[in-house]
Image 1: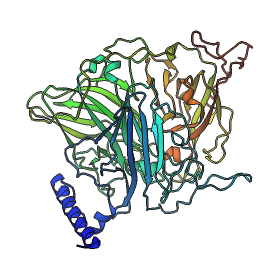
Image 2 (image 1 turned 60 degrees about the vertical axis):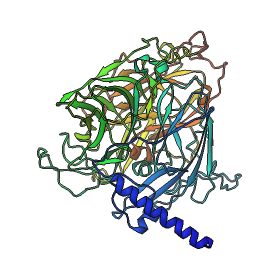
Image 3 (image 1 turned 45 degrees about the vertical axis):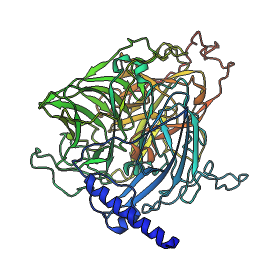
Image 4 (image 1 turned 135 degrees about the horizontal axis):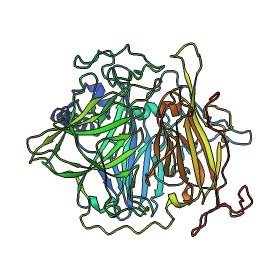
Length: 613
């Protein structure tokens, strides 16, 4: 047999095996052209949820190859996926603190969005045009890169830079290489692209995956020995955009749409949602919302690690047995155990009946399986996103089937863990900030007389002029010093809900809507309520920002994690400079914290009442 005929025989065997796999797993049949074009295979609605494949570090190193693929559906929508060398889609990366990650990313994108003109960083006259992915700044529909959301690693090329790093189709595999910090909190993180102007479409199409830093049971012994499950909830364009709401739903007012054609908030919890949701790629499409399926043994306690990888959709999760909300034992938020470094009990659990998870956020919680003969339901309740927000409706996500024959989850936590050593730094809530800054979300219709016209989105430092984020400028909106702690008051002057996120670090929520909160937890994403036009003050949150880690040195971004808003300009640039012990406070005294003491604040005065109030 010659080499050509041998390759043909191998290809035929491959396609026959692949077709058999699709039939066995309940996937729809694909024609030959689709088989050749698509690696982004997705389950049918109503399928049993399977977890992403785990890729674990060995001997302190995790090496993998990922390729970014895309595929255009018959309706014109574009599907995206990460595929590893073994053909696994969006694997979960499992590492320990101190491990080395070596990830080679290949860009195999082919489809360009209509009207997506390239956005290249403007070069200075003394610079030479460079094809290096580290400096190109090229941002198009076929450009890509990676952001390691929540990890405190340097904002540098080959680590976690998203400002200039851009990988193009035809480039050789680009290597991301970094070591997980030894002091990284154990929990759930994630990876996704961050190409300005095109992040939403790539994440909406499916480009996302989970990262787990092992050892949560070492921080919170309440979860020791529990089986664990990873659920990645994504949103996607509606599979049935022209379908009327299900007849079981109450009649809602006339449906309005935003400039992208998404359903606007009805304020009722019903009607057409802005986006469909999926659980580990099992779609739960409007209007019937056929739930996916989860099997659990009766009464079994599990740790669920839930990532909201949606581009724009908020979640408000409940687990119902016999229509009764069940207790959910929250143990970690945005990758950080609730009792990490704050002196709380070693077995702390915060019991809730529902959990609000904004886009980009993660929650890890204990769930108890239903009694024998009882099925459960995982639902997301409606979220009020404001008059200008999208419609995030009530809907089922998954049925929990109680079965003695339910398969064991793939992973279980150590039953006899060694406790984590206490953090070397003082608890963030006990450190006095060196400055208080004020920022605000706002929006502007380009045509005030047309509510569906294009919108500009802003995230502005008080005293600066609102402007959409410009990746070409390189001028920071904020300059901070490594080694310090700051307070940021973030207002929402718009009529829709926003989710604030910052790269490279976590923060602590101190005040919500002007009232102190008793939540000694760390986050990297938080909601800022919308302005109703009537209150005497704008809705706000007060956050304590932690720049003490040397890995925060460099240029990185903060933004709204509704990716439509981020792409539209609701983002800012911060530069963290190396520690400078000579810096002085406003009253002339030192304002840089030391290891054993905290500095006096260097706050900035300023009113934050709405105009004319």
